[in-house]
Image 1: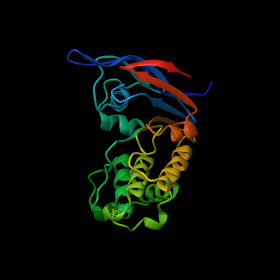
Image 2: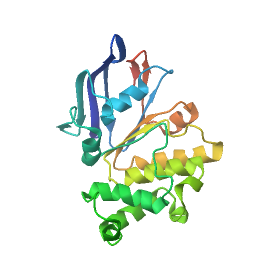
Image 3: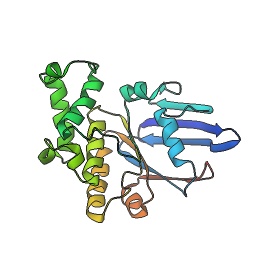
Image 4: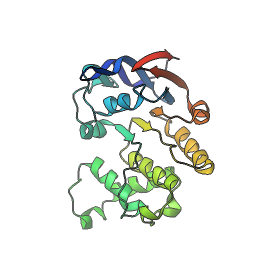
Length: 229
């Protein structure tokens, strides 16, 4: 059995009388893509938000490796090794690809408030940024302002920013949404590469992509797991 990188144990999330997530347990394994599928309103995005800390759990436990992180805020989970993307792209549109990725690497380094002139000469931060850009195939776009990139390239940039933080687990919430076929194929290849040495949780409605990528599959409906394997 491969190493469990992240685990949800009997997670519940209630919004008033609504049970958005009810008694959900799953494990994200090293070197695997674990896809979560189900209809709209099944609780998939809420589950990702519980794992990333964007929403607190009502009951249950979240573990990163052998460490319980249930009470940690999202920034502390990110520092511990949890990376995630959102349904809406979250990048700095007025900055270049390299500047975006360097900011992420700088945050991980513990020197997030250093002045620009200082960080420009931080070899470790710059090397982490360059490596993440190469890993996502954006080296030819390193100097491009983000707003002038295609939607697919912007999603690649968001993943590059995650990689610059050296995550152990990557949570992807509908990364192929709004993409054409060519961009989707590039993203599928990129996601497949992300699992090497990491665990990946994927929420996606494109079933062709899911079956091309998933090593493990969990099906949710009405906030509950109805099948997994």
